[in-house]
Length: 203
Image 1: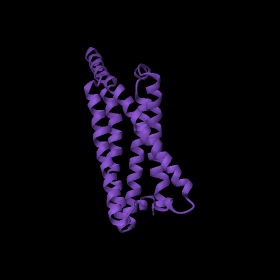
Image 2: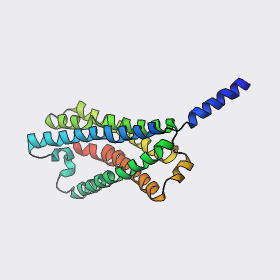
Image 3: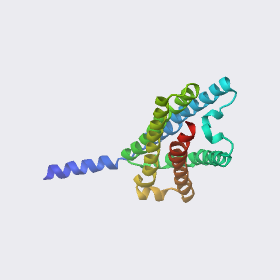
Image 4: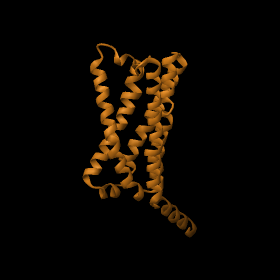
C-alpha cells in the first residue's frame, strides 16, 4: 500500500511540474518559428500566381465573382480580425506557458503545431489545382482543411479549458480577455471561413 501511495505522489508531482523555460521556448518555436514557415508558403503561392496569371484572385474561387462582393468583404474582415487576434493570443500563451504543467504546454503547442503542419500543404495544393484542376487534389484540399480545422479547434479548447484556473487568474484582465478573444477569433476563422465556407467556392 505504501508503495502505491508513493507512486501516486510521484505521478502527481510529475503532472504538476511547471514547464518553465520549456514552455516559453515551445511557444516561440511553434507560434513564431513554424508560423513564419507557414506564412512563407502563402507568400510563395501569391508570388507564383502573380508571375503566371498577373494576380492571385484565383485563390478566392467563386467568392470573387460578381454578386459575391459582400462575402469577399466579410472574408477580408475575418482575415484581418484573425490576424490581429493572433498577437494577443501569442502574448497570452507566452505569459502562461512557464507556469503551466508540461502536459498542458504540449497540448496547446502540439495542437497548434498540428494545425500549422497540415496547413503547410494548403497553398501548394491550391496552386496545383489552379494550374490543373483535378478531383483528387480538391479532395486532398478538403481533407487537409478538415484536419487543420480540427487541430485549431483543439488548440482553442485547450487554451480555454485546459489551463488551471489559478494560472488564468494570475494574468492581467486585459491580456486574459484579449488573449482568449484573439484565440477564439483566429480558431473560428480557420474552422468556419477557411475549412467550411471557402472550399465549395474554390471548385
